[in-house]
Length: 186
Image (cartoon, rainbow, N blue to C red):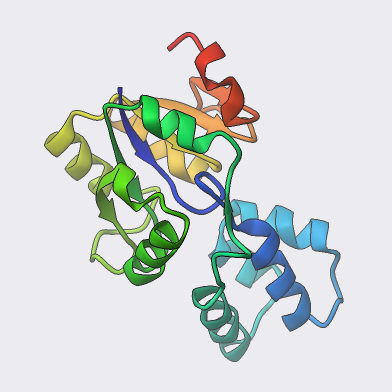
């Protein structure tokens, strides 16, 4: 199976750290849970929802780029799924240097044959251009993401989808954790 992965919230458990950063920037005016819910929609949505100034948004992004590996952890059993795949690629909005650093620090870098990152010039999700590029090049069978935004482009070009830790209309399958990946009838 050839798998296209989202990165944030799909391979790496990043949202708790992002939520903590935004909680500090917002000076505790909103709960961590509310911040987490809004970030799971998208970072730009959260910026608008909480009314961040341009300076606050820049600060949040700068702090996010410098988070160390000991804060971001790969999800439990994700390595097992990566091992089972014929090939793995990533499509993420995160900057390439940060993704590559985190993959190297967590010893996951050898699993991926290509990364399309936020600074590679492709339109942002849910535009399907980057997905089409990866699908045309590798014949992707499955896309895994944690938000509808990650799955909509895959569905639009005929790729089966898994929603990780959530549910949405664009998901062919849902998965609460990777330890039960083999239970799916894909």
